Each structure stands twice: as structure tokens, then as C-alpha cells.
Amino acid sequence: MTTARTLPVWGSLTGFTEAHFVDRAPVGQQDVVVIGAGIAGLSTAVCLAREGRQVTVIDRQGLGEGETLRTTAHLASALDDRFYQLARWHGEVGARLAAASHVAAIDWIEDIATSALRDCGFQRVPGFLFPHDGSCKPLQQELRAARRAGLRVDYLEEGLPELPGFGPILRFEDQARVDIASYLLTLAETAQASGVRFHRARVGEVQGGASPALVLDTGERIAAAAVVVATNVPFHETVALHTKQAAYRTYVVAGRAPRGAVPDALMWDDGDPYHYVRLHDPGDNPDEVVVIVGGEDHKTGQEDDPTAYVRLQEWTRERFPAVTGFTHAWSGQIIEPADGLAFIGADAGGMDNVYVATGDSGNGITHGTIAGLLISDLIQGRENPWAELYDPRRKIVKSAGEWMRENANVVLQYRDWIAPGDQQRLDELALGDGAVIRRGFHRVAVYRDGSGALHAYSARCTHLGCAVRWSATEKSWDCPCHGSRFDAVSGKVLNGPAEAPLASFELEDAAIAS
Ligand code: FES
Image (cartoon, rainbow, N blue to C red; front, side, top):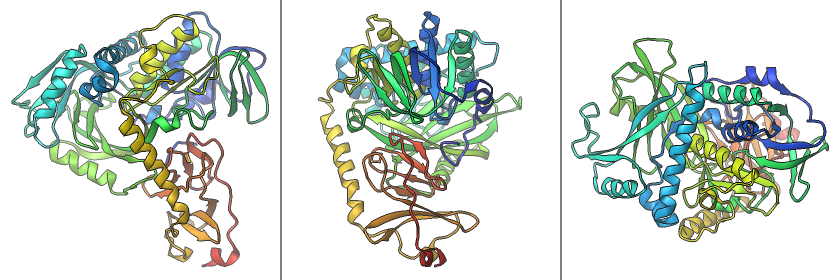
């Protein structure tokens, strides 16, 4: 099952999953079990396996079937939360460590990608930050902060001739891009060559302590010396981390342009929400490249806008008129931490020998790689200079305003339970559309598929009980509280933290006929 209805430009890696994932539980005591076969899980598995640890990767779906293949794979040490903001939240030393950790992650990715026989599309490129409104003041503030953080960055007052009308630009050196599907496949093969085994199974429970273990939804218990939860959002605890981060949807379009017409760089503006741009060279046409443009973010389950892709295409045509023939449109889930940096390390809920990686903050591939480098050190009992910075147990103090705003927003979402439904008459529901209706005390999420059949579920999110809302863009049920998403036809979980599917709801015959 895919995570959503739209398909990214990278394609899928189901071939590896079908060939190498075993559809049964691992047998006997395990050394390290990593839950999640995405960028964080695979990076962790490779790091540990290279040091001789026996690693088992478990995923409910397969390689890259979570969010990893939905990224645009910008490899940036020029973090989009701005270094003046990170310095405010984490101090000057913290901002320097953050920059250094992402530089190290890009270097590590380069090592793996460029030593592979497969072309992973790794390319060092500059990063261009430009103002969305022509204002140069925020750029100059970021210039000073990024330099203090140790990055090589210049301010180009006149902008660039190849980007007319963009205004002044900050140019960051040594950023990079990668073809994420080829890279993840290379990581998986590297892991496999080091003895890592892959299993397809659904983990229902994680137990920490001196003898940690997993319990699968089949009831089987698997003991392990250490457990790593690398599932984008942790599913094994309900509060410790979910109050410190928020889920956002981001939208992406891809189109073709003549080679050389758009600079080969990572580009992004400082709007809110902001836009981000990169090239991808699939190697199928010597005269063309693919231009990938993202943006139009909003909180998952809130302010869903079916015109997001249209507006992205318009924005692209305005700034890059050479881009024609849009071929792909897809969306992804960003987990935004309250203080701009991921939560990587010992379990926030206090489970011994359990480790987590979450809060990608829009820098998912580098944060996932940092997770591999950092968690492998922690499991091996080594000190790591980034441990405190990314510690999932850290207090959100200096960004407490942001944190409180996010949590007040979550509380507000529960008001849906006393609001009227989207509509009461099912005959108003068009083919391919969904709506929440009221039936007595119940709120029911109803989807009418292309054949006219109705699919009805309780609108109660199985995580902590918010009411789900319809996403016309992805044709899914999205929870506005912590970002869980559910398939409109099957009710199954597309994105956690929810683990259980939506509960089926029997519509009365009269309602079905209406
Ligand atoms: Fe937490 Fe829905 S994701 S209540």
C-alpha cells in the first residue's frame, strides 16, 4: 500500500522489498532491531552492521514506503529554520554543532553514493536563499548567523544574472542533491552485504528495560539487546514527543526544462510557507532535466487546499518560464519540531535501550543520516558531540512560545466533536469525494469512490481521539491533532502516530440509498 494517492518522481522500491523482505517474524534473541526501513532506519542499520553488530530491520510495508521516497532530497547544511533562530533556541555552540552535523551527514552520504556502482545522482551544488518579497534585511541577519555557525556563505547584493528578478541572494557552498530512490537502494544493498536482515511485520508494542522486546500484532514477542524506532513519528508512546512536534503537509510538482535553463542549485525563498527548488537528472534525455518545486505547506488535517498543485505550477512558471510539461505532483509529511532540530537518541518516554529518530524539520535525509551516526554511537556506548543537541528528552524552553502555540492549536482541533458535520445528505457527495457526516452521537467519515460505492468509518482518530478531516488533495482522512492519516477506502493507517485503522461504521440502508 502506498502512503498516499500521488506518486513521487522517484518511483518505488517494491522490487527490493519483494525480493529481500521476509514475511515472517525473526526467530530467537536479536542483537539490534531497527523498526522502519527508511533513511533513518537504513543509515542506522549500516552504521551498526559495519561495526559488527547483528541488525534486523522490520517494516510494516517495505523499503522506503514511509516518507523517505516522498522527499525532494535537498541535502542542505543551510538549515531552513535559519541560524539566527537556531542560535536563539540552542545557543551559538548549538547552532555550530547543528551546522557541523549536517555537513557531516552530507559527507557520509557522498561516501556511500559515490562508492556505489549505481549512479545515485549525487551532486555538490550551491544553495541560493532569496527573499520572497525583495527584502534584504532577513538575508543579512542570516548571513551573519550562518557564518558564525561555520558555514561558507556570501551575500550577492545584485543577485544572479541567471535568476533575474529574484533580488539579492545568499549563496551557500557545498550543499548537495541526490536521487533518493537510487541512494536508498544502495543503502539497503550495503546493509544487506554487511549481514542486515529485512522482515515485513507490524510491530504493536515496544518494551524497554534491561531486556527490551517488541510485540508484533500477531502476538509474537521478539527480544533484542537494543531497539531503534525509526518510523518518522514514534508509534510506541502517546505523549512524550507528540507534544513537542507538529505534522505538516508539503506539496511538490516536477516538470521538464532545457538543460542549462535553470541553475543546478538548491534554491529556496524565505516566505511562510516557503518554496524550494532543485534539479533532478534522470539521464533519459541529454537535452533536458527535471525541475522539482515544493511548497504550499499547511498543518496536516487543517486548511486542506485542493489548488495547492495549481498554485505551485503557477509559481514555477512565473519564476522559471523554461519549465514546461509538468509530469508529477505529490505530497509528503514533514514533522516539525518546536525548536527546529530533530529528536534523535534515547527514548523520550524513558524506556532503557530504546532509541528514537523523529522531527525531520524538512531536512529529512540529513537528519535521518545524523540519526544513523548518532544512535550507532549511543548503542556502542561512545560519546557523541551532537547527543545533547538532539536529545529527545531535552526541555523546550527557549522556543516555549512556539511550543505552546502548537499545543493550543491541537486542543482547538477537538472542537470538531461539537461542530456540525461537513454535510448531512450523502446524495450530495460526489464521486471521489469525502465528507464527515453526523449520525446521532457519531461523526462518520464517508468516502464515495469512483464507482459510487460508499466507505464509512468512525471519524475518531485511533491515536488520541481527534476527529479526522477530508483531504481532497490526497483523498485521505487526515487528523488535525498530530498528523495521522488514513486510507479513504480501507481506513488503514497511512501516517502515524496512530497504529490502528479507523473503525468501520455501518451506514443505515436509507443513508446508503440517499
Ligand atoms: Fe493524535 Fe489523531 S494523530 S489524535
